[in-house]
Image (tube, rainbow, N blue to C red; front, top):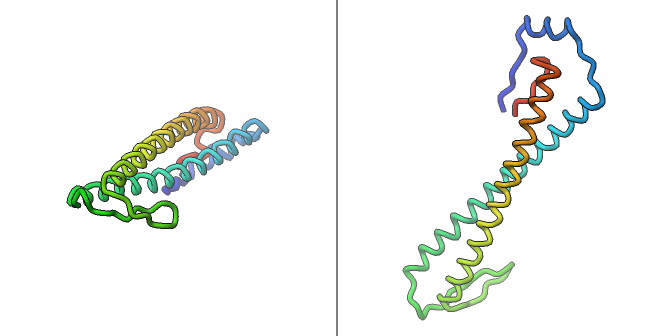
Length: 136
């Protein structure tokens, strides 16, 4: 996270025209903070989902080398179940599809959060100018 410090001129200008922080301004600042925290959580969750997607793809690639009559241990919850290769392929593809849907949903949420944060930035920078730092 990069922090931006005010120059002495900016600081003098900002302190010369002290703006009163109204209740609605504080609400916008608080909302921006909550959205930023949510954005960080979703980004971490997306990273985890993308890693799981890569793992599914890697397992699928490895299973292409297996024989059709092999019994493959497949993890369901905390236990492993021995299944034929065809069932394992079906389970992997359905898991991969559901993971794609989750990733898509998270990307949509992230996009809407970023749009809302941009709107709040515009409003707050219009009110406070350089005396507020909303860079994330």
